[in-house]
Amino acid sequence: MPTGIAGSSALLRRRRLARFAPKRRKKEIKVLVQETTWRDWALVALPYLWMLLFFLMPFLIIFKISMSVTEIAIPPYSPIVTFKEGAMQIILHLENYTSIFTDEDGTYLKSYLKSLQVAFFSTLLCLLIGYPIAWALANCKTATRNVLFMLIIMPSWTSFVVRIYAWMTLLKRDGLINDILMVLGIIDEPLHMLQTDFAVYVGIVYCYLPYMVLPLFTALMKVDYTLIEAAYDLGCRPVRTFFSVLVPQTRSGIMAGSMLVFIPALGEYVIPELLGGKGSILIGRILWQEFFNNRDWPLASAVAIVMLTILAIPIVYFLKSQRKARERV
Image 1 (cartoon, rainbow, N blue to C red):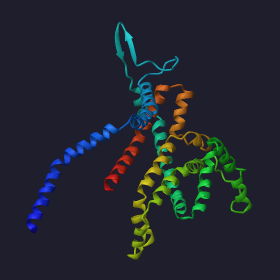
Image 2: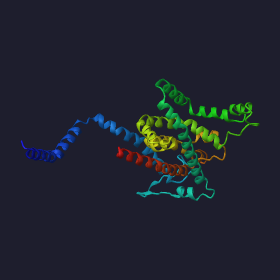
Image 3: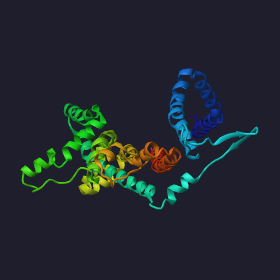
Image 4: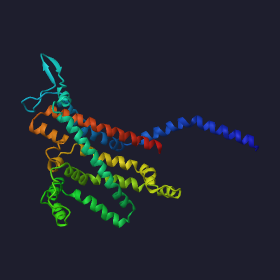
């Protein structure tokens, strides 16, 4: 057969396939929908049901309380929906939110800024300490890796409060750390470490470091090391290779680990209460005082809603970065 005739027949065949391709795709989609069982729907619906019951519903309840006012009753707040003479009235009070930003002492704004500061620097310290640990885990032998994993995860088997009390024993003036430093002659008198911001950072980094190491380790296991070798062959220096080749490949692990540390550290209560001093008034302590000491549930709910709004900013940024990373792939 001549080449021109063969080429034209192939072109006609491709056009015919392209014409019927949408119909074929619709049939395939229809078959997939028919093959979907109730178990598949249950697996898809289960996460949404979990979020509905344990996030959305509590959020709506807290939001409803934040729109009421304090009353001497059980529960200690006024209802926002009332019925009077057969008419339903919805009364929403915004003074709880305005009082947060118009407080004369600025207690709430200072606590927000202090919490953001502590959470940010704690996350940064966890990243600086956790990245070398994750690198060592990703590049060591399997047997050594298992031992190191046990050393990292084993403290989490102990009660959270017990570990914080252990750090209180270590950091106090007559504690083990001061005793060792004085025996070595490094200091002449005990250091005041407990009830300080330093102790708060130590406690948060110690407790949340595994949440940074594990996502970083997962990301480092997927790194293409041939790109690093190529960078060295092209004369790239180690520091530039780290920031230009390795860090972009582990960006997802950095973002995930940072979120896992930053979010709980922002609302932390136990560590600042036990290790921090009177000056470390974080948002967790403010919530405790308003809920249980002052019994001002509406104001405490408003403080919690504002904190959740602040947390939504890094979460949205993380989700957008993850979406962009998938689109690149």
